[in-house]
Length: 60
Image 1: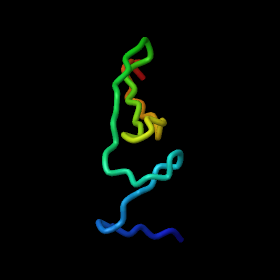
Image 2: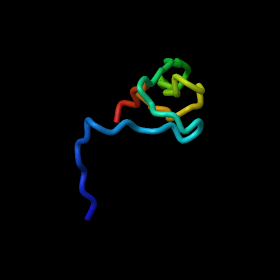
Image 3: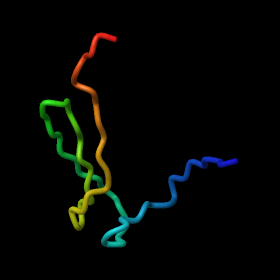
Image 4: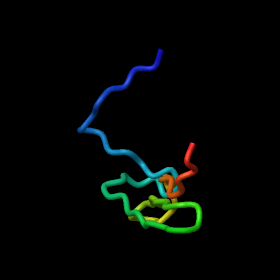
């Protein structure tokens, strides 16, 4: 079983530049298939992840 533990004394490390991540930058992108947010490292600007918010209603 996996356990989650909240830690405020540890900073995450960028998997690309290996520096501590004190700030995450993001940029919103809009297109035909909805909105997406692109998250990237403030030091090396490498992409850390992409989120997706549905912008279409299919009426199901």
